[in-house]
Length: 273
Image (cartoon, one colour):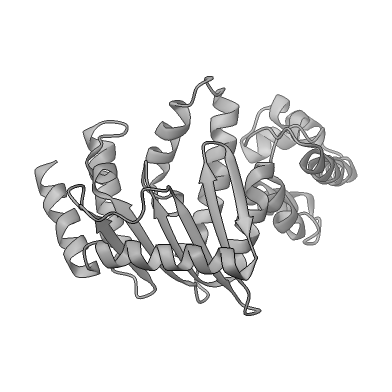
């Protein structure tokens, strides 16, 4: 569980906390008793009821059953999932969920949707100014929730990723973290709706030097572009701007290794790590 620090999310979590408190009191349990029954401290239950922490889905499900809430707490999962995203990622997560096709080129590390949990955690712990563990947990929880789009049982969007060779070679978190990340890429790369390509470092005609970008095709037929520099992000919806990003992404894919060659390269790198 993690803390949240923007007004919209705080309001939602306070509403969820009030519901937890109402059902707990209806069941005539103290905070300590509810915590003991679910494996949490009294302090954690207090923080949840005050809207200071984000309840995980399994907490809501178990609390719903224990307190005989009739599905009312479980039904708040979607609202909690949206509230857990940092404000700057909320729109991005919604666009990902509405996409039927998306393409992504990332320059400085492995794309968020392809990261293992330990790789994510290492990335956030390297941030400066230093993140507290609560903020790290919040960011990891939000990113893992976004990653569910790949693991979802329902039909997922068609996704293509272009990764820089150097991001695969960089031992973020140490060699074992790097190995498990490469193994994860090989597994994900076998999925029918996922294409992973590697951009060789020695590419002379590199069309992606302008930075990371993403292109989304939505269910309603709309196409959006997205760029990110440091902590500054921007969506593009104007046809000419989106067309420019689409052309750039097409050129990037054309210069990268083909999908089969890319997986073979990742497998070779794994053997050398």
